[in-house]
Length: 318
Image (cartoon, rainbow, N blue to C red):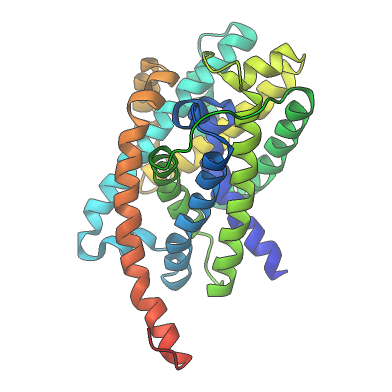
């Protein structure tokens, strides 16, 4: 039963991370398009490692991760987290616009996704948590099927900076989101959760990078491959589901509470999504990666006293 709770937290982390960027293949192309297999796996491992401080802080502070990281400057932390998730929401809505246009020729995909997101958001945390737990296995099945039909050798150089930026960009918000569900867990659970995250993300990234070889120039690389293998409807449903879960998690972190605030934020993101899905990922996401790494460093510093206290209890001296 405890392991099941660990899986639920890990799957919520992964679902918040995959969204339109990973599920579409666009993030992988931008950050890891020239990387070899070792760099891709390194990225997944880094995400698992980087998630640890956020999970620990979620456990020790009853889900109040932002407060535990920024302390008396929590208002600054809240602004940063809200801004990052607002940008993610803009990108997700832009991704919905692109995928629905490619599938059905509908030019109002972002608007439709915004409305559905708000409707599901009003159903509360437990409903959002359930959706996220279901979406991750479906995305994995989708990737496995695509990989079966089309996979290529991952060729490139070994990079460290791009995996660091990718991990920093994704881990902060996904960690803060998943940390809300870490109450009643312990440090051992944190290690298990991080291992599960590292395995899932490494697997996702490796398969996506292998699948999209040759389709890097496409706006939605994974959908393009799915279309070529006659899996376009299945692919569109899975990618849209991934976009929806990411929209929900981003909106949840971008607003303080339910009400008109959520509607205003979602509508503003809808307007800005006209910038284009690819442009947001290409030009804004690397900057968010740098900000994410900064928050990660602060979170790690906050965790250090907790670990030192634990070591003293065991009679260990660092």
